[in-house]
Length: 142
Image 1 (cartoon, rainbow, N blue to C red):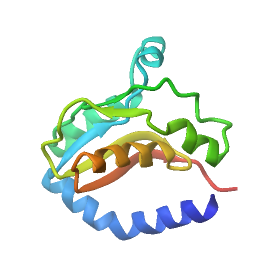
Image 2 (image 1 turned 135 degrees about the horizontal axis):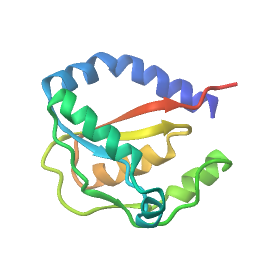
Image 3 (image 1 turned 180 degrees about the vertical axis):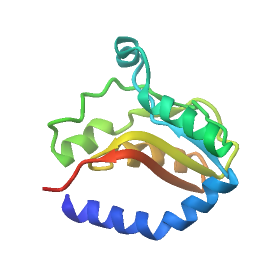
Image 4 (image 1 turned 60 degrees about the vertical axis):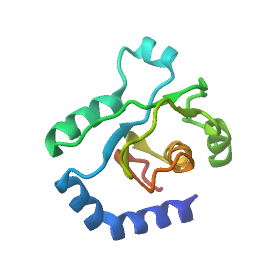
């Protein structure tokens, strides 16, 4: 786990300048990580969608809700890294083609990266060339 997060952090530091430049130029599209419709109905909102909308306004970038969560997954909290990956497998489906070759997935929290990795897998399988993850917070290593 720590190795994965260290690698992810290292890669994110390397790509920080690239991502910053792409965002400042408004290149690409923002796609929020979706909640399952039942969970969103109970909560009343999707925090990742709210973050993506605000970021989109700030950097003049479109937001697309073309990704839906077809599988009502368990909450990731308390699951092992392997359980998280299994829990997210085939959770997402693309409802329409993504017109941009660069996508920024927006999520509220990063722990193991399982959610972002599964969403990125679906996007790449459907022709998206580059996928970056943007998160508000991440779980701190102890």
